[in-house]
Image 1 (spheres, rainbow, N blue to C red):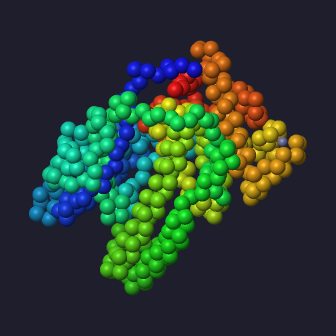
Image 2: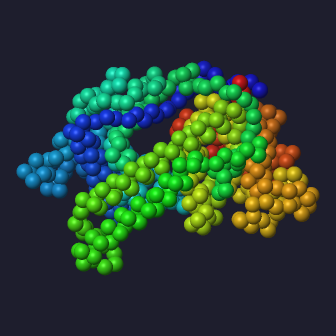
Image 3: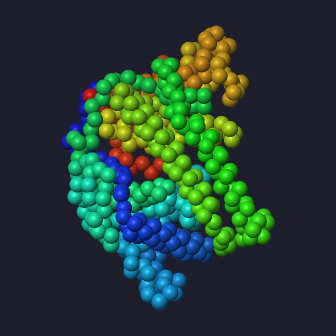
Length: 461
Ligand SMILES: [Zn+2]
């Protein structure tokens, strides 16, 4: 195979999330700016919902104009002294929500057009949403471990920006009490590229009993701290809900809390909420670290990685199962694989959601239609092969990747699309369709449903 991806390759978009060490004043400003962004989002969403209800498509530019006309005048946006409080927050924080809103709506309409399940954008609720706000690239400056941000000035960072390249923008966000600066950089291709250490082809089954099973029979379990932390999470959320319950009783509310009610806030409840948030942030960190190490390893060691295209198991799941699924973090796993793959020149093969990776015998290709969810091992009725459920699924996925690669090298330039028949290759036939995804440069919109054969150009190193 030759490397068809050369100098014409576009630079990659990568984001570096850096911990901020803010002063109390900066912390206060960040909270205010994030609150402003949330409130503007909610205002824009309410307006656009009105437009949708009256039969038009929401127009973000018109909305923004509409907002600009009232933002320094409308009583809702003035403080107690009649001054517009938006002036104390940098403009980007209250302009960006309109761009985000436009994106959310166009995703919604695209999904509806495609006949997929579509969810319109939702209102953000304080304490329930991610607190964040945006800063445009010409409004801030980085100087080693210092960032100069609008309105707050010099901010201390824990580390310097990792990559050279053109900075596209940044956002400030919060997780528990910690604030982060996430800088988006257009990283030159030669810097972003990583050397691969192997040329394997691997199938990965994300699972229930072990976090990931590879087609090499290796089972990778989720980090142990996660188990304990999840137990503590249950305890702490129970404690918090008890406190909330007692606050409700004190306030004399039964049933649903009426909209707009503010329960009296106790110190203990605030503490409980913070403890819970801290634990959730820790769990997210442990999980992210695990997923990062696994996805990097998979991309580094393999020329092709095959996974299930959709969270099939999660869709079938009962609640106990979905807890285990949540441990693996399917969508985060897939997102990381997809953005890392181009850096290593690795192909990611997403199996079609109907591809029965668990049910096919990886030995003879016969489908075991009666295989139940709980069966960890099974014997093929046709050939007698004994299978570990997860390893068998991973091997089938690996076959899919092998077939996709073979089809790509065998076919002439013009007809590189992978068809269901060739996708299964010499392995089991199962009506599976492959969806090779590569070189999207972090631009995935989360659908990942690229079915264009043009994405299948040869590349190896
Ligand atoms: Zn068999």
